[in-house]
Amino acid sequence: MSVVRDLRVLLRFRDFRRLLSVRLLSQGADGVYQIALAAYVVFSPEKQTSAAAIASAMAVLLLPYSLVGPFAGVLLDRWRRREVFLYGNLLRALLASVTAVLMLSHVPDWLFYVSALCVTAVNRFVLSGLSAALPRVVDEERLVIANSLSPTAGTLAATAGGGLAFVVRLVVADSDAVVVLLGAGLYLCGALAALRVPPELLGPDRGLIKPHLGTALAGTARDLVAGIRHLAAPSRRSAARALGAMSLMRFCYGALLVMVLMLCRYALASDPDDGLALLGVALGLSGAGFFVAAVITPWTAGKLGPERWIAVCAATAAVLEPTLGLPFDTAPILIAAFVLGLITQGAKIATDTIVQSSVDDGFRGRIFSVYDVLFNIAFVGAAAVAALILPPDGRSVTLVIGVAVLYAAVALAMTKERRMAAER
Image 1 (spheres, one colour):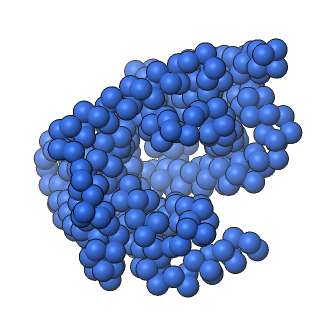
Image 2 (cartoon, helix red, strand yellow):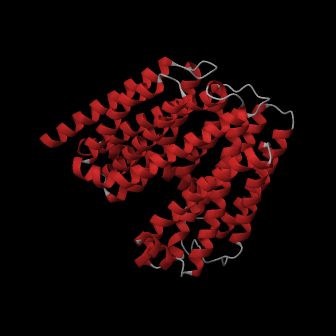
Image 3 (cartoon, one colour):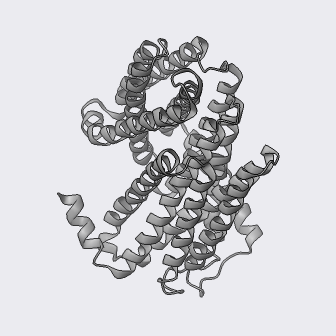
């Protein structure tokens, strides 16, 4: 397989191996920590979980990416990236240990969420630094391959970390604090792995003249505004509409995820441990849907066009989501998890293609920063709306029908966009 061959070539670079080990340990720890947080908020027997608590947890996990992400690069251009990995992972190990202590203590929920928020905020700097450092450890000829394989390996590590958290939680120790301490241990291993990298290797170059921090931050904000104006131009209407469609589909996915969490906790399982196991199956099937989407979307989007493929995905969801969701039964919900994973990721890949082909090269980075913000805010907003709608057991006909209507609206909008594009 070409992927295996490409990875073997990259692994011949010693410094790439070292940087990859930092990524795998860091993102593996992220997966452990996030599952532990979700299990504590949703599936602890002593807690009466509400949709509002789930929405708070999602905000803690995702809002730092939206608020810190666009400005992370400004700070990373001033700090040695090796130190970002070292001290960032040490700080997260310490904060994760604090989270474990808070789980075992009778403290207000807001204090627990502040601790978790700090852990996920640091994560944005580590991930951005890993991407920025990659050109320092491979040659230019193999940079594209490295940019493709390295983040994919990190995602797989996060998934494996989540799976490990499920196993430890269900088999080894019925304690979310123990799982969090496992994540803290992996963060510490990530910090130790960073010590194997020479301090100056990963940059940034000390000789480059940089503006003052305040000027750089203000410039980043201006660049984001300029990116939005660029996107709003009539010639880039297809990209703007695709981003809007993807944000709505992300909103739908987020609302349904909260519903599935509540169903697993209260309606579809006899006790919290069974509910957690069922959630693990649902997330695994959704991840399988993501994988299938990555395999079939290049062909289907190439045949239909990316706009029509997004419309097909949304229309399919509009039909299947209420069909599978309204029975509120285990088997249909698990099938829906796979289908919605496939549909959501398929639409995202098509949206990425539209944005990359429609936006000028000088604005692409800024547009994808805007994309990232929209993507995560839509998810958190969906959780907040679901918290207002869902009953305690998660069975909500209103939510299921409302989401189906949104999917249908996206399908109609993207069909219209396709027709208008054909006429231009």
